[in-house]
Image 1 (cartoon, protein in one colour):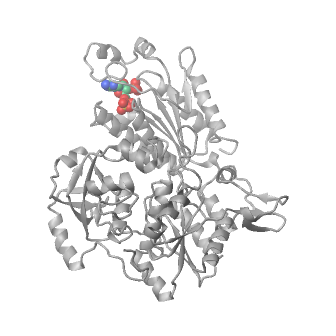
Image 2 (cartoon, rainbow, N blue to C red; image 1 turned 60 degrees about the vertical axis):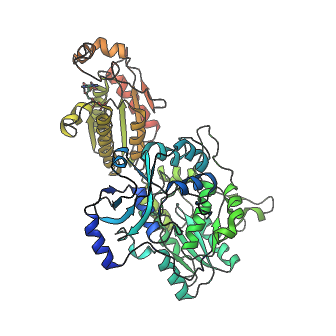
Image 3 (cartoon, rainbow, N blue to C red; image 1 turned 135 degrees about the horizontal axis):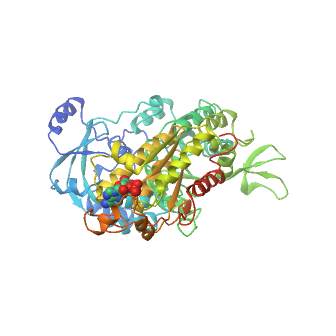
Length: 570
Ligand code: PPS
């Protein structure tokens, strides 16, 4: 049954007193530290954003959702909301157990009664939900690389909402929004979902959509998790606030949605519609390539540009929200205004700046015209996206022990310091193992921890505008990919494969370790008794045999220059 947009939506919270009692009991329960995505999911489960879900999906619901977008009772629900955990944790949890769900600081937010525990077929999930088991899809990559191997499901009892210290006044639960609309007498509300800054074209299209639907407008940006590489939400919210002045205050409002997007295109659009219905809206704008994940590994779009609109239309009555198809707005120079692309006669001059072009202009400090965006928005974007040669970045050397990584990394560091401009830190394999990872050995598990630590430090350096040079062996491709992802949200990641062959490394045997490895005195030695995944697409591959260190370091510098990371200004 579709709920009236004015009635309150059921939440999963218990009363304050019950929560206090339950919190004491939960202290004794096995507890799970929620990941960033699970935190977002839990918040929307508890506040009714994911209604009618009562908790993380059990197996029957999961199967139904994956196979046919329906819960076991037939209700439409397109996205698996699952609690993925490690095998180690899952092994300690029998169905019937209550577990405490904690935020990263250890605060208990909810208790889940585990009814189901199962090992999902992730390939099937990827194919059915995202359309392909292709790691180029961010949610598929997350599924395989970050999500735990076992799922737990069961009803959730909410004790308290996650606390947000940023933009508190702009965050609303579904019931708060419903109450707001009720109070203002907004009976028809059209919501606009976005994960990008708003420019003039968006302002025009949302304003038009609201006018056409004769509805009020809710700008409802996602501030949970969006596509890796997106503009951070702090910057975006400052941009949205600047654009809000462009709408009539009495008809438009903005609220932030702490959703973890999956970039699942058509399914995601249906999901977004259901979430918006729960927030009390009646209309929803669905655009071209809604929640699109970009290109697949063959360089083609994952979904057709209007697949999301088609699927939404098919389920519109069940979703309970009317779709307002997005009009592609373009700027007509002769008339100095935005108009829907499909209403423009031939012969007029249409201006457009693509997302890629905008990023290029920001990167290179070039002009962004007023017809494209609002000066206040451009100012915010420039503050957070300085030109590339003033941003932080990471150079990540990988290769066998004795391949020359440390020597080249050292030479590179000295050259960068000679140039000056940005603080530079070298995280060499040996040095890291002395200061950061002294308790770790060389098992796969320990190597992964070691590399993730390096990645974390490098991402912090990159975020703060410095240069991190890393030089571990980093033998596993999956771990390197994780580090890349961590860093690319803040700046460039330049992988340099020091491709000295194992034979040459063994011949040099600078530290005498290869001999010991051959004699079996050192176990799990990379290249001898432990694998090394050769990087498939490093930014640079260095052939060190027959070349000197200086030349190798020069090649890295030239690469950095060609990527725009160093320039006259650095
Ligand atoms: S890893 O796999 O990235 O965590 O390794 P890393 O921290 O870079 O290793 C640093 C140095 O440890 C020495 N060493 C070994 N390497 C590989 N396998 C085994 N089992 C091993 N045991 C000790 C080796 O000298 C590495 O130094 P580099 O600087 O690479 O020569």
